[in-house]
Length: 278
Ligand SMILES: NC(=O)c1ccc[n+]([C@@H]2O[C@H](COP(=O)([O-])OP(=O)(O)OC[C@H]3O[C@@H](n4cnc5c(N)ncnc54)[C@H](OP(=O)(O)O)[C@@H]3O)[C@@H](O)[C@H]2O)c1
Image 1 (cartoon, rainbow, N blue to C red):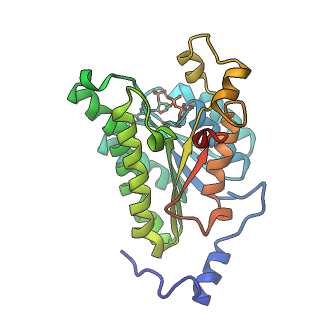
Image 2: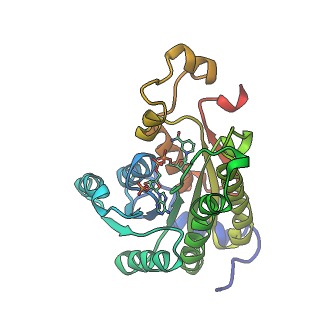
């Protein structure tokens, strides 16, 4: 690894370097950054990709298997005069991760931002859970981010700049019935956030977690199977009285991907309308 910075952030040269690397104005906070977003073909992942492009970033869109899933997203990002590159592959497959990251580096020369968004969230009573089911969830939700971080961090270290945002749910902090594997994996992912924040602080790499509560996605609409909670029901669950929108979710991630959060690392931002305090 190249030498880390010397001294603390009070070191004048280090502060100047932070400033050179750009405190962006609101609205274009990610100007000319390159972001790699996993599971970006739909829902929150694609909202993050679009938000990043609106804020000035070029985007690498990872989809698991279906390239066409990202067609509309690519059109919308291109219309914003930003570049979008689609990389197809399963984040649990080390060779696929290596290939996708290499494609991104060949295309853009660097990756400034990694968002570990891809996840699966099946429900299963704990005593019926087979080891294969447990392992598969750990593989996607925890090992996938490990592989992506491991492959992308060396280029961030070289350029002494990087932002990693790991996405979890509020359930990682409060538990949820029949989701032991999901919760264990996501709690582990926040552990990875804290570990990497320490390991890479000397390279100006910030690593943080966003924990969502209820976000209004198509997946959730399917999950409620036509029984979307009433306004009264939402008020019982969430102080703000409604689920969050995908745009609100994406804006929270954009904040942590930008230099507006330059003094935040190893932390979690809870975006849940206050649900965790109920
Ligand atoms: N929506 C919520 O209310 C909520 C609440 C708490 C936390 N979150 C977190 O927010 C993130 C996004 O949630 P979401 O609701 O948008 O999820 P989603 O609709 O289920 O989308 C998940 C994405 O991950 C991709 N993916 C799954 N396994 C993958 C793999 N092995 N390799 C590559 N990509 C893979 C999926 O691809 P395919 O389409 O090919 O399956 C899909 O694009 C997740 O980390 C989730 O845990 C969401």
